[in-house]
Length: 383
Image (tube, rainbow, N blue to C red; front, side, top):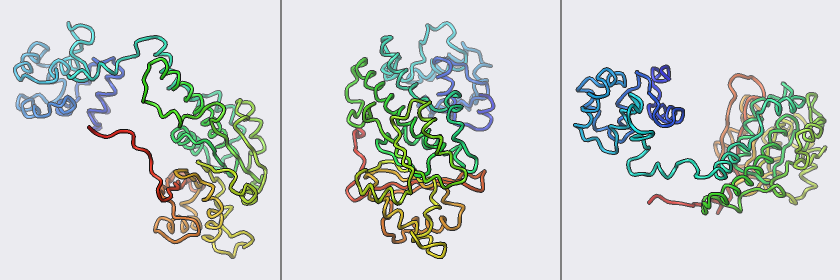
């Protein structure tokens, strides 16, 4: 913690971190700036008074001693119990009762955030935060046969997992199956487990109005991953996907299509709408169908997206791999960013991320379909 302070970290971040670790009365490091703490306690107007007395760091208060520091702050009539809380951070609780004087807010709001009143409620909350299975060492060992360095997905897999956990897709499409497939399958399963945990928590706590229940996935409708792969890439591990999915107990969430992606989209003919699409082999679609290497790169990518885009649900996401450091796809991405006309777009939102430590397979571009009239719901407003 001392190193964090010396590097100029936000004192509020430091205070929150240490309070979480120390149960509310953690002794802060001696170098902790008082001006930041005073602002965190909403009494920043006392900063000049403290600094006029030479009190700039927590250690300066400790040098005074608890009694003299308490007298100094009592004379200031500090609101919000700021004096008691600052003393607790500087000296520990001392002779105060357990937790006395270190509430999170003087108006009593902190008391409403206390731990659940019953064991059942506590168990329900633990289920919500502990339902994620990915990244467990045993899980990572199980999916290791799917890893291929040439595919460049060692960090894409975790990113896809986190995004899918957050946006809660019901129908996913992956073109180019392999290592990332396991992360998407596990995200769908964990979303369903999380939904069950949330509903149990709501029942135990009687906290009506917190959840949007119709947006929660379920075990029966919690999501399917359609994986399309033509087994053409020399480094493919798609042939082992079903085996790994079965080992993880995720085979019921997998629909594996060994086929050409364009043919798959043609034959589906709009029967399935996807709210999360991961296109791993984007360069495979660089040239127009049947056009060969002499055709326009932009035309090929636009042709494919023209087939894909109508299958994306409003608000859905399309993630494109390896888009930034290849001159062919970079020109196409720049055209989108600059508002160039296309057969299918433009996307409603766009973000590109670069993994700077690699020369190849090192980027992802995220597109969101936001047709006219689409908007996220609003559930609250400021008072």
